[in-house]
Image (tube, rainbow over all chains, first blue to last red):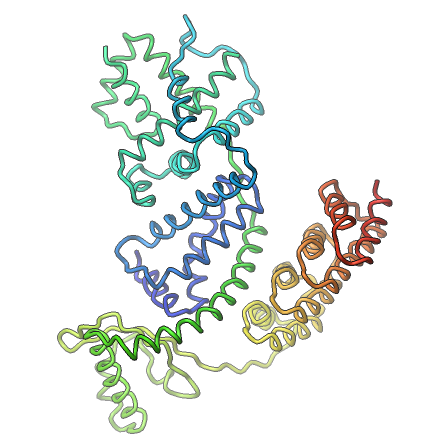
Length: 193
Length: 319
């Protein structure tokens, strides 16, 4: 954390909105992009942006410089994303199977290999792939999806994700690799259908 | 053969979390194991597919609008919070005086006494100034009407006679300039979005209204759109809506008007938005299916007769 950032945090902790804005403008584009990747809808992404930064503003006084500001910020943002998605799911009544059931399903299908083929042969279009990836991402639990996005699209290390989500690296690995199995299973269906 | 071990290595390879030793082990194994080679190719295929898939990125306008909306929200949060803070501080100061707080208060008292002494005894200023950090312009701060507030102690132990603290120094600035001057407009725009006093926000909108240059400025337009949509004072929203009428109708304005039509609790604002949309429609601006859906909803559900009637007319014209 730079001295300038530390100073901005202290001023923002005193309720200085201009300092708070200056502080978060270093991160807010990435936050909006992450939210958009997560919910794939501009209105929802903007809701997440507002909710997350209001929480950051309210909670900033409790920030004690024990971690990087960015880690603390992303912890709030990822929590808002994960709970936001859950809220929508609950409202729409779309979740028929539980996350555990979905995970079990993924584990079963992840290693069903067609006989004799070492590489996929069917030619598929980009839009088909895109649709399948989107569908597959929606099959992941909110936490799995967030971990996958942070790792694959945002390029965070497992250690950093563990720090953001405040859990062990092993847990993150498990979530991530289960997510990969599910995605692979979905795409195998596409290539071998 | 332990395929589970290699399955884990393949996953780690996929996410760039494999070390060089493990990579060699995996590569050797892939040469001899068709099953794991298949797994590897399958993961590789997934990785390539995901790389082709670009997830959406927000554009600058969305970011600007989100920032403006946040500014409004922060203002209301700050207003709400200040009340609780006052209560909390009063309770805290009455019942819980910790040693740290006492030390901070004592340091504060000392700073106050020293500052007061220096302000009223200018002959001693040089001596104090020599002990200050080089980058602190004390004279500039103490001259004029500068107000110091929010003093916050970072180092409350005050070891070795030093103390570290931050504060806000507010100095009133008097500006006289052309209404079309970009610097003046930036300040007006900030005031329109941030001022706590609705009367000041209203005045700012009127000043912006009298500038012809501002009608070509995209930032000002975005700020006005935010005020129209999110300002918590109806009078301010109405004035902003009038000002918006002077901008050339475009897709952003259409979206903002539809937002007002859908969300504003004031029927006056909704009627004004509806009139603008009807007018734009007459001059050749068309509505897409998503827009028409909003009109359908308004025709059925709005509690204002005029809005229901106009929504019906729009639908007739566009279907």
